[in-house]
Length: 476
Image: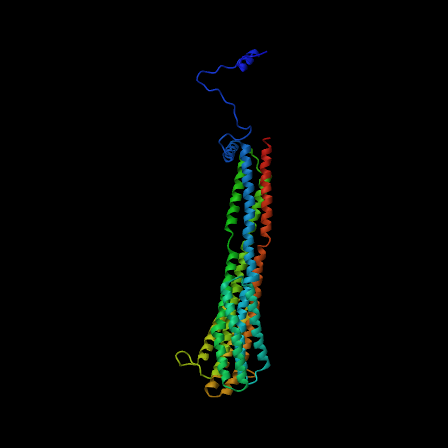
């Protein structure tokens, strides 16, 4: 059967259906070309996502899904941020124990070794043309200790330009100093007065170049110690704030759940709250303990160590000047030309020694710490009395009598100095142990928290999701 050109219309008529007639002036509808299931034409995925989110907020299941995602994200973020911040604090506390404080102590030991070498060299010079073997051994041990500690400091300063500069200065000047000492010894063995001049020149190199560089190195490493200590004790405010926010949102979610269902507990949300609360309380407790121990380490260890190091340095300086005053025999005067320079420097060193000992005793918190300091103070007073007797002999023109009271066999200022130095060494060892114990306790207080916070954060997030899913199951 054939149809006319308007075949569709004729075919529809033949099948018993007639197409609706088009109204005059209208354009026939065009078939849609948009793919099925895709976003409307002219709209991107971001717009569609916002539309779906808006639609989700209009239904309770949608709102619950959003709430579950927010709760899980908050709990996980709290655990992660706590782990990161506590790891940073723990690393700083570990640096205090294992790097900063040992380097500061080594720098102080460099200064002490150099000063003791200078003092020992002067004492050996006064002993006569043949220097005692124990004096030479002590001098050699001091120089070897200083050189070894400089190598160690150079390897562990962490790229500090200030410390590296001072270490370079010390390495350059130390061979010059030892060379001058050897020249002084050679001239002294020959009985030449030139030996005294070399000894004074060596002392000038020590006091003008080596000891100031060692002091600056000690100051630089002590500043690094303070920086690490401050970093370890800084409160983790971001973790604390995020923890409080997480607990507040969890409390609000459970109150919302109760208002809609009249069910007091949601086990999943309760578990998430408990996990977050444990992390927050653990964070507060651990950081409080760490700060307390670091405060103890600073007050009863770090500050005491600085004072005791200063006392020991002052005693070494005083002893060196006491020896040089006998060697120079008044040939070196103060700037005003009225007094013996070395005698004036001796008095200044003794004043600094007694002041540092008095301050160190105030900081000592037990008998084990106060005992050596009291002994050092007592021996210092004895040293001063013996020095007055030696000066009286020297001023009376009895050089040999003065010399015997300085470096003689018994009841000498040298013996008093050795007793002061030994007492200070015991006090330093005690305070060093106190500092290390307190700083290590601070580090240990934070050790397990990063892993615990991360694990509890994951468990808390799982609890929040399970708790919300249980509510969602009621709508299915």
